[in-house]
Length: 177
Image (cartoon, rainbow, N blue to C red):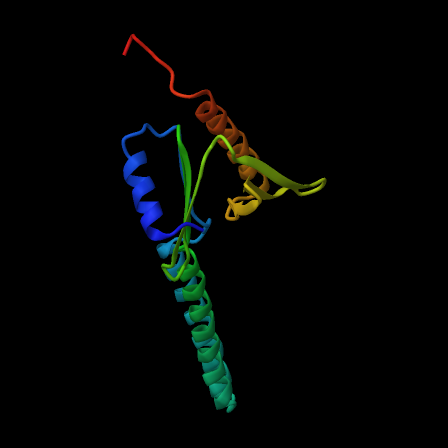
């Protein structure tokens, strides 16, 4: 892992360079805020009506447990949404490959590699597909694209290999533009 000063120096040098590839990866969440509110409203109504039925039968403690269930489910969703704040940014320029990972708590970790020395490795399961993608450079191995599914990892792998190959070829001269 590089120090903050090295990253800032490298970032200021590479800002002038064109980006060959840039990807911002985030965890997939199928339930948006509206869906969350609908699910919680449905659970609250069902729990309240069921708890009310038990309350009328004289089993008053059950009413409180139904409320507790809704509270626990709400808390689990909030934890899940908090975990969705994580992200991973991968940028390839002609002279650098940068990986910037932000945890769900906001902790930032950054790595910088020379694209000439980086190679990609993958762990493949015959039934599942690509399980893990790694950047390997000078004996260091960095897991990337952990948020993606197997098909998405395959597509991401192909795009990143193409970007690394373009970086290795170097800048091209185009007199038309």
